[in-house]
Amino acid sequence: MDIAGYPLIHHVFARLKPSTLVNKFILATTDLPQDDALAEWAAQQGLDCYRGSETDVLDRYYQAAKIFKVDIVVRVTADDPFKDYRMLDAMLAELETKKKDFISNNNPPSFPEGMDLEIMTFESLQKAAQQARDSFEREHVTQYIYRHPEMFKIANFRNQEGDFSDLRWTLDTEADLTMTRAVYENLFSSKSLFQYEDILLLAERKPEIMTINKNQKRSAMYSAKQGN
Image (tube, rainbow, N blue to C red; front, top):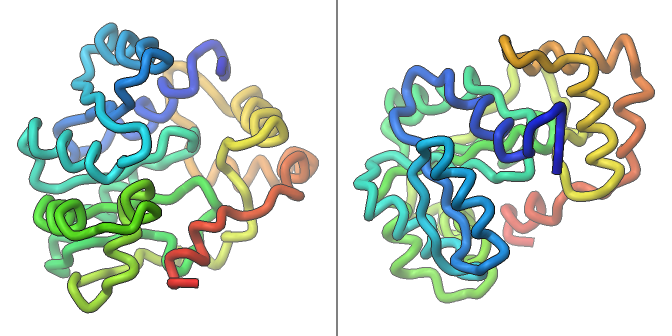
């Protein structure tokens, strides 16, 4: 999908590349023919790419991390065009300083849906990949960790400015796409990144933009994290 003259996947990577703590970006896509275009795009951008199972995404992540010798793995879902590299760096720093195995910002959520980040040590990812048997856990990468908190040192990164989890900044539906394009039309520049706060200010100035997709249900992943 085109957003402000670029494919969606461009924005996902571009918004995180200014990170000062991440030194490798990998596109982990499927080995299906319909994802050839993604692999070709990655090659054009000089990005590392790993292609694996469509349904066993946990194994796809594990194999990518193992092949590229990654010690800390950041999970970034490709349908979220509003990620914030500053949040990523803050969470990476907290993972290290608190000596955690896994940190997320959505358990419970306090940021808008679509701002989710999950960071884990390679050892934690390996343990999940080797021990998870449930198909749901294989498909959704981190569910084994959420469901076995006794096996991992887990932290949650909370929004210190309040709870904005009622906002929806992800892209699953036509309404989400319309909302995303409206935000980019107002804020996007190829020379600088708009930030999390800029979207909130836009929501104050033009509240009608945030109502475009307000009737979409929040992902079932949030209740699944609690084991429900």
